[in-house]
Image (tube, rainbow, N blue to C red; front, side, top):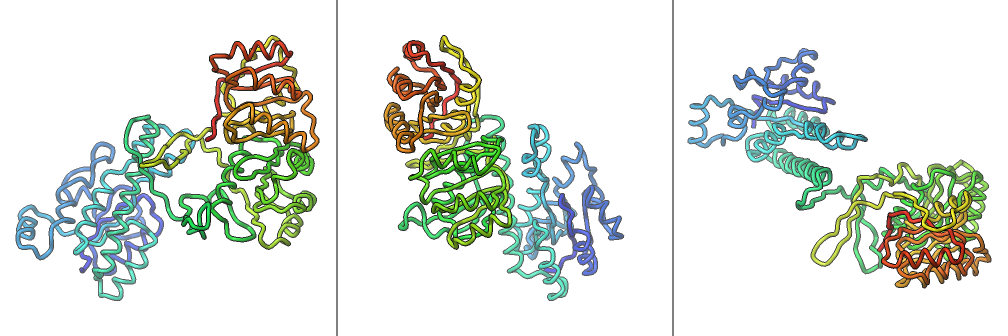
Length: 506
């Protein structure tokens, strides 16, 4: 199809002047809107304003400019169809053979911090998707371009076919156009569903990042979708597995709750030990001391650069993945001696408050807000007020217990974990495991803080913690037996804080 007339209306103006000039050289009459028309004129490219073409002014602050029968009639009438041709002549429809549109930057707008609902709505494009769909529907005769990356392909086709495009190219571009509008609409619906808390259907489209060798087990196929590469960069080692990726995400979520220099060790998404210290080597020693058996084949994450000294220390145990915002030259040299060890640079944290947690269930999906909360409120409910050191220990444990599978118990000091009990059916059993782990590691729980991801349903959990040596406890509260638990704490001179915030992790 010969390109006799083109309509150009773009938000992303990269490369559009050169593309329009190529169209002009092939004899195309160019129609344009607003800022695009202004840019083309600055580049000495002849252009007609859309209002001149339609005979109707742009109104409502530009909301209505291409929503006009002359635009959509020029795009949609079937060339060669006698009835359509006659009606087009009667209505004065001039054929539009090519549409170049990229849409208002809705996704970039909502990615900005503190964007308002009004700002987001103003960046919902209406005319653009309408033109794209009209052009794509009539791809037998009309070429539609939605991606600047396709400009050169179209120009080459025009050059090779004397100003015409091929049906194959038009089909290819039409499919791409419909994918684009569907993704755009889905982004809008997802945002509004989230912003307005409206009961509605949920939809999600994510780009494929990689096909994985297998899933959780070798007999399961798997793939990674989304923007994983925006957060993590693999510097060295084997291909990431499904389980590696789960662990990396869990590790990044945990470390995002710590501003001070911190090292965490995880296994099967559960923290084995966490330590903080101005000297990251000391932070490592504290984390590793919590449990020296479980970290074998685990994940290590730091929120500071890994230097040569720390690299030598952590390379003494076998790890699957080591993550840090940066590795010094000496640190990388030490760690890269292990050819299979994956080194991951943490590019951006995983503390997005707007993130969604999505789980598959029989017949559907469960979708919830990510558990981004660390503190809601702190209310001392015991007779004894906690000391400053006890407060620090409770807050440290509280940040860690959020990332431990329920039922979860963490014994902590102000700068390290001492014992972790994860994933038990009974909270008392979780506490027993945490105490046993501390004993195995040779760590005393005397004077420690105990953190529980959910309330103690009975006094027995609090009593067990006190008997293990804990002098303070932090928990959400909310049990019908809270009074009994508080009384048990007071009897044992245990200071206790209720947070009002639960951290179940199923």
